[in-house]
Image (cartoon, rainbow over all chains, first blue to last red; front, side, top):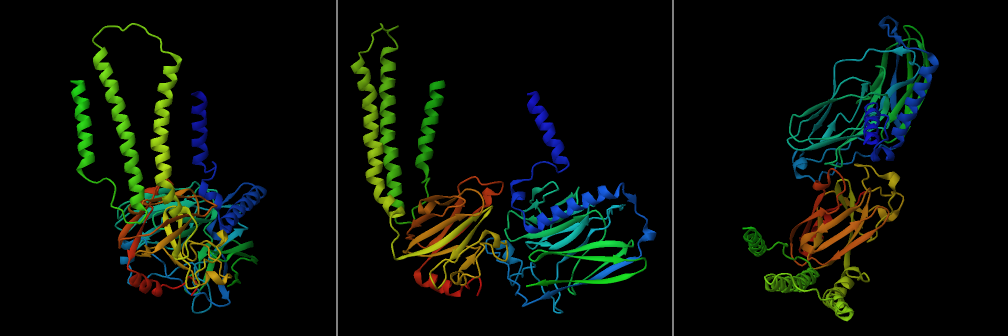
Length: 272
Length: 263
């Protein structure tokens, strides 16, 4: 009994910190998830080398890195999502909604790319925003499909549909979540305790539903939209590794040095 | 008082059994044979069970009022006889009966695949069924686990394989023609599932890494539920699909409207 009690306590402690064994689903991580694990580990090593973290001084944030994510090659057509297994979901849409996995914009850029500072900010400790970010389950899709959040920033997961959805995250470094939201309007507030780029969310009830969230320990990230552009502003002067992540085309990195009151243009090109 | 309670329970059980059919009506050709087997086993083992208990009860009733009976050791021969007799009787009735009645059905379900049958694939994953038709070429294309994507490629079809281009992949109901033998190839993407269609008297496990199959000839048009009969996780209870059995003409009309995954 004593042994069982100790084992249980150890399990609880490990679970709180997300340090326990990953769930079965986490074993089949995508290349992107492994990238996130590597990125997080690299960030941790750099932080150790940099010594104790300094509190962030907003007056230093005068530099900007911006650019666009281009796409080369033939743009793949967006595939209609097959919601045939759930009549209620089909009823939401006159025409099947299109997949958000690969969206090539009219100007030849790529949408839904998560761009973030992977390396170069390890010496700083940034304040955590109290304003929440939302992951909405609406019309049997996740909205938005890709987004970013700061570590320990509130993430509100909401069910806007009048029937059951299930929220199942597949992290490597954070604690996985897996719960149902049976009624319309149900909300659950979650947070990431560790940096991880990216974490996949899926619905076990509707197999086509998927979303990706990048959790980072600083505010310098952006998601490309209809123009494929991104901007990381209010950076302190320094040398950075900027990474672009895409669900299908994985990751690319660019090293950039930016001075005070300076704006640097960089770019990424993913090949189809 | 206690005896009355148990008798009441027995009567209630029998009445419940007789109140309605507890097995859904058969909708496949081999289903009647399965039902016959079930009834045969129920009847034979039931008769033996009831007869045994009636004899036991009679002896208890008869000899319980005479006080303690004198000890009389059994002969070895008598003991062997009363051990072997029920064993042989049960073997003859149950095992031999099942083999004689069941082997023709087994042959129908698992024997050599006949030429004139429609082959489809049902893939189980937590917690849904995904259906694949081989398309106009009649061949299933290759699949690769690394190509699986929930929306873009739920089965991981290999685009470089010509046979995969016209494969039809669906999340909705499985359509089958009435009266035609259907061979459903079964694969699992994750854990063990079980493909179960009660009206067709079909229950077949899906094992990760293996391809199993279920074969049946639907004989009645209609809508039938496919359920997972192997506890496969939290969403197991929702792992359902439908089979729509329709006249050959309607089925062909529906099939002609479906597009290949890469078309």
